[in-house]
Image 1: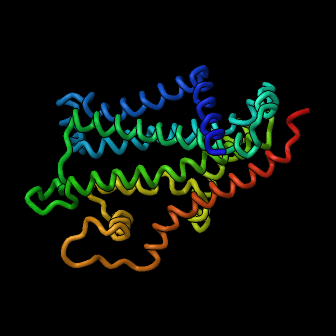
Image 2 (image 1 turned 120 degrees about the horizontal axis):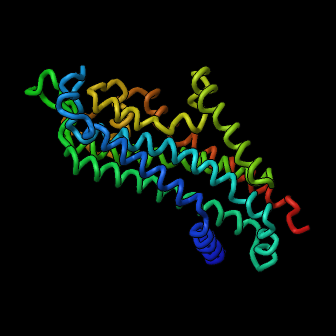
Image 3 (image 1 turned 90 degrees about the vertical axis):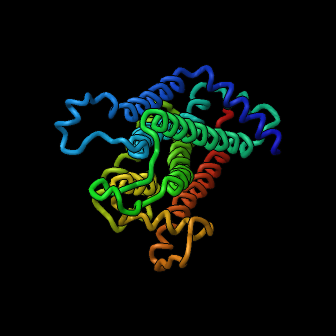
Length: 303
C-alpha cells in the first residue's frame, strides 16, 4: 500500500511540471519575498534621514516581513491548488483511467494529500531560506536591542531569534496544510474546477476577514487564526514589543531548551493557547481528510 501511494505521489509531481499555474505562483511568491526583503535598501540616505523611523539595519525585521508577505500568497496558492486536486481529475476524465488500474480510492486520495503536504513543506522552506539568506546578506543579524538605550542588555539574543524563526515556520506549517486540505475537501464535493476554486476562495475569505476579525471569541477555534500567530509575535519582537513573546518561551519550556538559571513559570491558560495553536489546525486536517475520503469513496466517478 505504501509503495503504491508513493508511486501515485511521484505521478502527481510529474504532472505538476506541466502546469503553468505552479510556475506562475512560485514566481509571484518569490518576487514578493525578494522585494519585501530588499525594499529597505531601496531607500536613499537622504530619504532615510527624513523618516521618523530610520530604515532597519537588523536583518530579522525585513526577514520576517518577507516571510509574512510570501506566506500570505502561499496560503491562497495552496487553497486553490487543493481545490483542483480531485475536481480537475474528475473534470478531465483522468480519474476513471487511474481508478481502472489496481489502485484503491483511499490510496489515490492519500497520494493527493501527501502531495499537498510536500508542496506546503517545499514552499514554506523556500520562502524561509530565501528571506533568511537575503536578509542576512544585505543587513546581517544582531541581538534585539532597544535603540534608545543601546548599552543595555539585549531584549533577545541573536541565537534565540534564530530559534524562534524555526519555531515560527514549523508552527505555521500545520495551519497552512489545514488550508490546503480545506481545498481538497471542496475538490471532492465539486467536479467543476472553476466552481471549486471559486467556492474555496468564497468560503475561506469570510473565515479570514469576518469570523476572525469580528468574532474574537471564535478565533481560537478556527484553523487559519494560527497562520500568523507566531510570525506576528516574532515581528513584534524585532520592534522590541515583547508582550506575546511568552509563546516562544513556552515552546522552549516544552522542549527544555533556551533556559538559564531559574525556570520560567507560565499559567495554564497560556500553555493551553500554545497547545491549541498546534492542535486546532491539526484537528481540522483530520476532519477534512476523513470527511473528504468518505465522500470520495461514495462518489460515482466511473460512469
